[in-house]
Amino acid sequence: MRITIEIDSDKEMEKLSALLKAFDINSVNVLTHEDIPVTNGDKNIDPIPLFGIWANNPRTIEDIRNQAWSRKNG
Image (cartoon, one colour):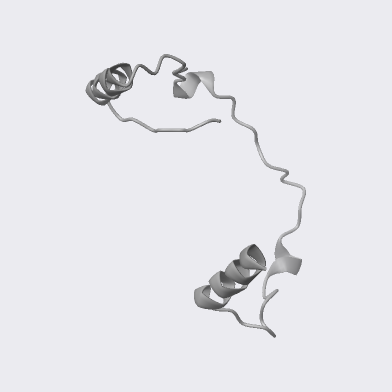
């Protein structure tokens, strides 16, 4: 399992390390922003055809949530 925690300062990192050590968790890998490769997206895709994709079938966030929950439970 992988969990990502973004920390802004060294002091916060020290606190988190102390907490993990208190729980005897030793399998932690620390990566900095320099260690994480950046993958650029495909700039050749034309987004214009996607504009208005839901124009004839507008949706609210509640509709999307209800549909997602019904799939998850059914």
